Image 1: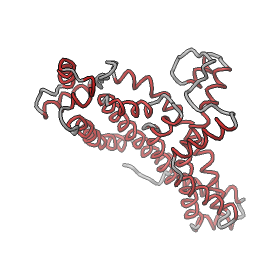
Image 2: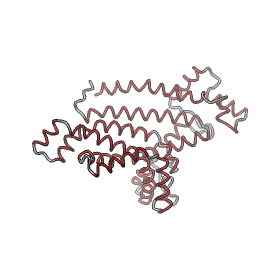
Image 3: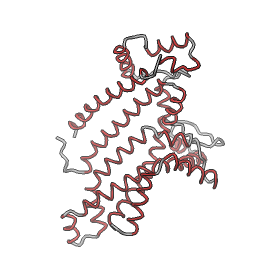
Image 4: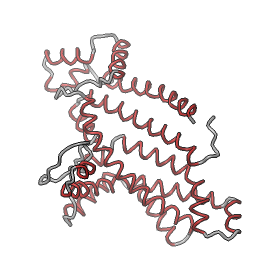
Amino acid sequence: MGRYAIKRFLTIVPVLIGVSFIVFSFTHLIPGDPAVAMLGERATPQRVAEVRAQLGLDEPLYKQYFIYVGKIVRGDFGASILRGDPVLRDLVRRFPATVELATSAILIAILVGIPMGIISAVWRNSFFDGVSRLVALAGVSMPIFWLGLMLAWCFGVLLGWLPTGFRLGTDVSLVTVTNFNVLDSLLTRNPAALVSSLRHLILPAIALSTIPMAVIARMTRASLLEVLSQDYIRTAESKGLPQRSVVLRHAMRNALLPVMTVTGLQVGRMLAGAILTETIFSWPGIGLWIYESIQARDYPIVQGATLFIATIFVMVNLLTDVLYASVDPRIKYD
């Protein structure tokens, strides 16, 4: 297991190098002078010279890349062109909001998707199976931006049951400890903030969970149907074991491997920053931050956040691969 984890970790190094080169190329793909394009209407000669010096644009291209990589290795993601704030500091400050939203969404997806897939596989071609497959197809096909707007309009505007933006109500105060509002509410024993945080979390989490829930449900159904057709399952049934024991103890454990794969991929995608969901619900995470930075042409933020997202994605995939052995002991990594 240890050797495999080290080998898998070494394989992600070329991936991150490739991503760093692509991210570095963002600046040089801008038509004309990148400094002028970033500053736009604020492009005075003095400001342009400052930005060029800050980004090292006066150096040869290969040297610029090595300078960029050297800064990244030291934890220097650059600074915002507009505000001058360090990109890494803002990443650390905004990342908990995205983690909180993504964690809530993946919990909804797992708690709904896996039982839906199990029931659909056990009662194949039943009425529930048809409804489940229809819901899963709608979930995969439905655009997140449309669903988010409909949820906000229905439950926020029309019914007025839930808030449609931000992480906390304006009438509620919360002492920040970890930047995770739900956790901070529990740590500081602030029930009003806890209720407000959960209410603000419901709509964006549901919107973000729709596609992962549909993917997990469909994969659970397909994987479990394949396992249920195996000889050892028929043998277990012939011994008189209860159907619940056969499905949950024998079949589901072996059907869980592909489900883990798609779940890990979905977690990586959501942690990478749900730009559409965060923008619709004004959720102050990495996704909304990238969207605003693209609009403002603040490319150091876009570069730093993109590289950070890529790193998170490959690390989640690495963790998923390493967890395979704990689910399926037949896999021998060594």
